Length: 128
Image (cartoon, rainbow, N blue to C red; front, top):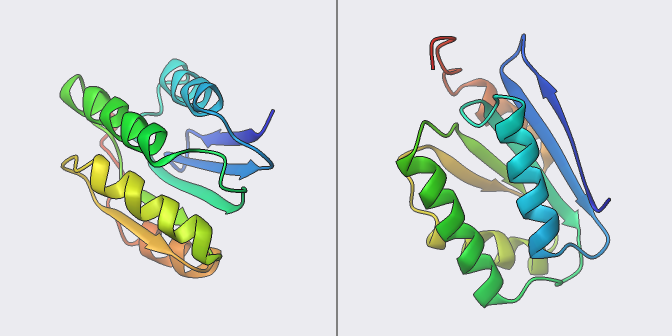
């Protein structure tokens, strides 16, 4: 499984790491898993540094549209994308531009900086 994630209900946080070649189906499986865990509104870190350019710009935009769908049907939480390579950073920018949902989203080169920023974002209410 190229995308691994953990959900912390006490911290209202999802941490995901993508490795190797990732497909649209892998990301959709992540979306489905997070939704099934009731964590779509949680704060999220998504680390894509070790992911080769597996997704086309078209696929990244399609995933951005999927996020917009989730946003229309409920709250989605702040997202910190960690992308230390130039290639992964460019992919993250394409995705971010395709998913202009009303939620904080930032792209970082280092996990530590992403976590600091995410910790400063308000956690969603438990009533969400």
